[in-house]
Amino acid sequence: MHRALSALELAIVLLSALLHAGWSIAIKGSRDGLSFNLIQTLAAAAVGVALLASVDLSEIPAALWPIVAATGVAHGLYLYWLSRALAEADISLVYPIARSTPALLPLLAIPLLGERLSLVGGIGILTVVSGMWLVNLGVSVNWRAFVAPGIGFAYLTLASTVGYGLLDKAAMEHLQVATWSSPVPRPIFYFFLLYLACAFVYVPLCLWRQGGRALLTTSRLEWKSAAFALGIGLAGYGLILEALRTAPASYVVAVRQSSVLFVLILSVVRLGERPGRPRIVGAALTVAGVALIALAPEMAPEIAP
Image (cartoon, rainbow, N blue to C red):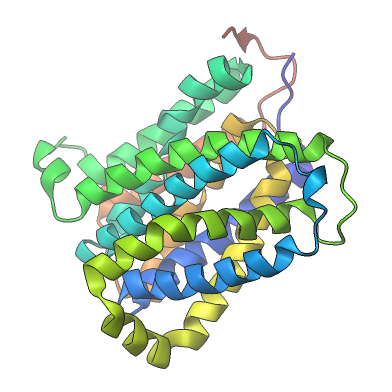
C-alpha cells in the first residue's frame, strides 16, 4: 500500500510552497524579470563552482551527472519562459497554469518512477488540477484565454516543471543512497549544482533577449532584492528536495501547488492585482485538493500503474 504524506513532510512542502510564491512575486515585482533572474542565476552558479571543492566528487554517483545536465536544460528554460510570461500577464493568471504540474506528473511518475497513487490521492490531484484550469478558462470556458498575452509562455513553463520534477526526484534518489562525507547537505549542494548547469542555458538566452546593459542596470538597482529572492529560492527548493528524498513525487508536487493560493493573496497585497471570482474559486479548489492529498488514507484502494 502507498502511504500518504506524513505531518512533517506536509509541513515542509507547504513552507516550500509559501517561499516559492514569495520568490515568484519578487520576480513579477522587479523592473526586468529576465535580468532579475539572471543575477540570481550567476550568483548561484558561482556558489556552485565553489561548493565543488567541498565535495569528494568520487562520492557522486556517475548516473547523477546526466540527470544534472538534463535538469539544467529544464531549469534554464523554466526561468526563461516564466520570466517572459510574467512580463506579459498578471501573476494571478500565469502562476496557476505554470504550476499545474499535477496534471501531467502522475501520468509519468507512475510508469517511470514506479509510484502508486491511492484513490483518494488521485481524486485530490484531479481537484487541484481542476482548480488551476478554472483560473485560466473561467466558468464560461473561453478558449480565447489560451492565446492571451503570456499564456503560451505559461504553458511552456508548465512543460519544463514536469521535466525537472521527474529529474529532481531521480537525482535525490541517487544522492540519498550515495556515501556522503561533505559538510554541505545533499539538497543544498544539488540546488547550487543544478543552477550551475542551468546557467549554461539561461544566461545565453537572457543576454540574447535583453543584452548586457539591462543586466547592469538591474544589478545596480535591484541586487539586494535579487539576493533576497535567491535566499528564498534556496530555502524553498532545499525544502522540496528534502521532501523528495522520502515522499512520493506525485504527492509532493501536488501539495506544493498550494503556492497558487499564496500567490493569489500576495498578488493582491503586494502587486495590487484584482483577480476575478473564477480565479478565487479555482484557488479554493486547489486548497481542497491539497487537503485530500494530505489526508489520503494509507489503506485506500490503489491505482495500479
